[in-house]
Length: 275
Length: 275
DNA sequence: CTGTTTGTGTTAAAAACTAACAAAAAAGAA
DNA sequence: TTCTTTTTTGTTAGTTTTTAACACAAACAG
Image 1 (cartoon, protein in one colour):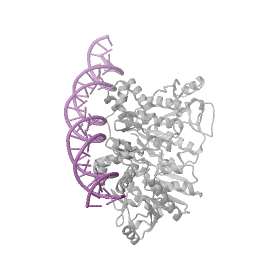
Image 2 (image 1 turned 90 degrees about the horizontal axis):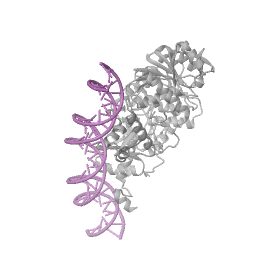
Image 3 (image 1 turned 120 degrees about the vertical axis):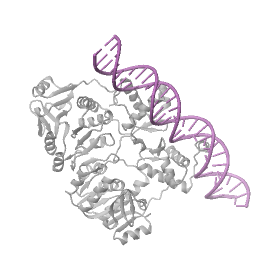
Image 4 (image 1 turned 45 degrees about the horizontal axis):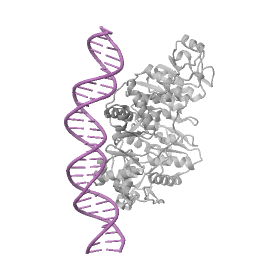
């Protein structure tokens, strides 16, 4: 062990000053990251000293060294890896929509699984400073620190789903105008329209139809053939539908007869794509 | 501080080869991290090319550049429970405030580390259906599915911190009235007031002072003794301050002289060890 | 006090990074 | 196709960051 310490020039027992400094460094790391030059100046020691401190912290897996500084080593979490088929399909659908409607300057992304997938696509593929208005906390979280400007409607947080509905949200939405409204649905009938199971959300969706130049729905095809609590859009309200290729020919004909452009995504997995 | 957020020159559309290579890089990142030299050799391209790929991935927040390589950028988890001294102290402070001001029927929780800790305390200790108004996404996420009713201000998502500021938020906040306003700060001078480093946030904080019956600030004591960009509150605006016991006697006297009630939390865990 | 251990500063050399431009490859248009 | 344009990769030179080695200083035990 002594040998190890010699090699890395790291000593085992630390003096008081050193420990205090390293704790301060940890604090700084927690607030986003540090630059060696700044910290050395701020703490009144040499850059070399800070380097040694950070090297020590990195060795303890508390920090990750970057060029000229360090960031916090996040605790390893094993949960993630959302690689199931549903998410894969949602991403494929979302990507098809992305290619159809981009570039746009402003869009409204309503809450939902497929719209969340669209947000993920945006993060990875989009470089332009598009504005995204949304009522979904999950989408806002996803788009945080992307190049998108994110506007979140205010209002009351629903208790069963992390999104905002209610009178405040409905009032706020009137302040915006977007190129594309992008929404999902809980159920759909190709000769009736699109349904959702939440009354408050339905109200908001209805209002949102009026703030957009164009309206698109992205959803998995299995949603077709059922009704749900309330209808928030008629078929002819929707300009574009993107779904997977399991959509029945009858449904597709119905939709096209009502003037909806239908994009059916080929399911064959573009699994190897980054998105 | 946020050196890894630098704006880099990044190309817009990607060719097939490039995308494939970046996918492979992502896979490699998933298995622990990459060294530029190794990868360049393995993929038969120049180090410069790998650098550009990694730079691109870093800009998409998929990777973090390190010295000579990169590691996976973990998805931001606003609910992360990091076990360290800072969070411990914040929770202790938050609990003290909780015991002082509860029960209340409605509070405003501003964005910040210690206020987030207060939200965690609420989730754990509170059983009553209190209403929480906030401009912080992290707090909203934390309180989601708790017994609290959560109201999120609308507005523009700040790019460096997951919270809402700007004119919409400022307008929305006027609709609410709460028993207690709870805020943190970036810096404080005991004879001047409380400071924050963000101008927009400062505006919002100032407005928020007027919607509350009582006003409290919770913050670590090391914030005292510095100034920051803008002052959002004078000392006498604040009715209650909760902080740790490292607050200097001079500061405490100043605060009390201006009519602020000061609660100093005893630091139970004096574990100075970093490991 | 003296010698040892531990922490910090200084330097020269090595490594990594960047920007700028040249070459190659790919994509479009005539 | 062929020519033109755009995108991607390679190369270089110059800058910044990191390292290793050693010298000095501070802390500490006997």
